[in-house]
Length: 428
Image (tube, rainbow, N blue to C red):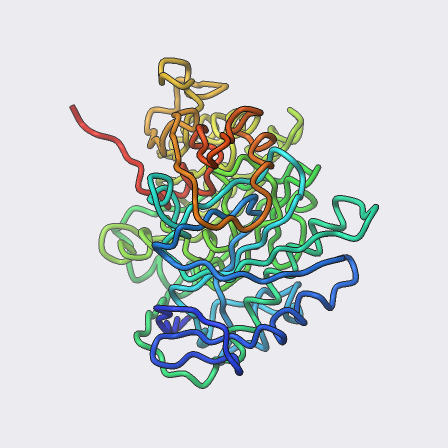
C-alpha cells in the first residue's frame, strides 16, 4: 500500500473573491464557505472567523479540529462514510493544506470542550495556535437535541475542510511524503529478524457524545480490528467525542498521529510495524474485558513482540489501559503505554484511577490539573463565559478583565496522549 501526501504549505489565510491557495496564502470566498455550513437546517446562525498564529485571539469552546484534505488519486473525496462514498483509503495521492485548520465552535455539551489561545502562555500547549484557522461558530435551532447538534457540527467541520482542499486541487505541492508498506506476509518475509510491533489506539467510545468513528462507523458498535497505518494517515478515523479537552484526539490528531509516524520511521530498520488496532474504551466491566482480551489476542495472532498503547481520556479509561497492558504482558508481549495524569494541582496525587504491576513501561503526557493563568485577548471567538462549565474551569475562572485562571485540561490538546504536545519528562 503506497500513499503520497502532497503538502501545500499555508502561511496565511484571508477572505477573498475566490477560494484558492496562491503564494502560501489561502484565500477564501466567505459567502461560499458559509453556504457549505449553513446548508444544514439544524443551524440557526452560522459565522466564520479567521484566527492566525500570534494574533490576540481566544477561541472558546472548541469541539473539533480538521486539517483540509482531498484525494487527488485513489479516491473520490475524503473522510469515507462522511464526505465520500464508503471506500478504502490509504493509497494514491492526497492533497493537504498544511498549516491550516478548520475549528468547530459552539455551545455543545458544557464541560467537555476547551479553548485555544493564538498567543500568550496557553498557546504553546496545542498545535492549533500555530495553524491558520477557519473557525465555524454555529448555533443550533431552538430545541435541537444535543446529539443531532453534535452530528451537524462534526460534519460541518469535515465538509468545510474538504471544500477548502477541493478548491485548491490545482496547486503545486511544496513537498511530498511517501508512506509505503506491504502486506503482513510480505513485510515478515522482508524483515524476519526485526521485532514485530503493533499499536493499540485506544479511543473514546462511551456514548453520551463520547464517540469515535472508523470509516464512518461509531466504534462503540464494532470490535477491535487491524488496519494499515496508511488508513489512519488518510482519514479513516474521525473524532466525534466530547471529552476533557486536554487529552481528546481531534480529527487533526488522527491524520497526524505521531505514534504512527514514529513507528513508520523505524519500520524496516529497528522494527517490523505490523499495523494499527483502533480499539474501544467501554463504560462497563464486561465490555472492558471483551475488548482488551480481543486486543491482546489479536496482537498474539499477529505474532507481535511488543505493543505501543495510547489512551484517550482519563478516569474510567485508565482501567482499559491497565487491562490492555496486563493481558499482553501475561502472554509475553512487551508493552509501552502513553497516558496523561490527573495528579492534582500540586502533582502529588495518584496519576491514574487504576493500576496494575504489569504496566512498567509508562510515558506521561503531563498533569491535566496543573494550573495556568492566561491574560485577556483582544478578540474572542465564541462564548467566553462557557469557561465556567468546561472541565478545568470554574465559575470564578473568568475575571472582569478577561483573564482566566484554569487547569491545563481546559486547553485543547495540552496533554494529548498520542504525544502530540510540547509537554515531556525531565530526567533528574
